[in-house]
Length: 325
Image 1 (cartoon, rainbow, N blue to C red):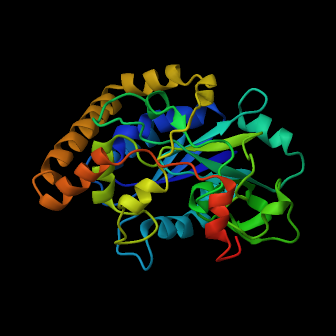
Image 2: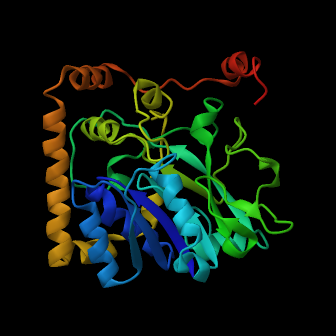
């Protein structure tokens, strides 16, 4: 069994599209954790669990560190994880985009023959001037991304890892933890880092399409939600600047056709209604936040700020020379 591990809070508007895509590429089951939802995400997960192929585990706080790390500790002891042969921790704004073979998990695993862990590098998909919230799949709306070779920042080159569960003791946000004996990485040059080497193309076999920003209105709601693995930590303009890359067009993920799966999920009378309610909740929450000056100021900065400029190797070296990266 190939298992995707997901944590959500108030992200029901994106849930069905995410589930459809990852089922289409070959994940057999999803182990989903929810916390403190006001938009009905938890009810959507309950319905998906009733339909099959997903397990929903409520993950209420408080937590010592953050909701995602608490969820991963629970995942390590969950029967779904024990049954899985392969697992991957993937966030709701991350889409595994397989670029080899028939774009399936099986094709990726076959291309990395013998690997126990397959790190896949983020590719940041920027905002591209999209202001208003909508109800279209983000894979269709956001098609401008960082170049395949990025020299800075290293934060935009972090990895998520598809791994054999029997080779590690527990999952981690970016890489599994506790190797059981010697393990083989598909990219041995990664070492112990959580990010791929800058200045290289890491997109030969797969990439994580990271839609970290979304529409400007949605980003405001995301900032209000807070960080999944840092309780109380905020998003701000630095997060936006480090991820708002629009230098190249990349529609490669559309080679995977999940429209039928997505339509079937939306056609379910319960899921369909919950999805529409989640979209409406985000729109209402944005309007509520705009009543407060700090949120209006942040929204204004988003409107004023152009996409991040791509730094060349010489400019990146000016930064890296002060610390070995």
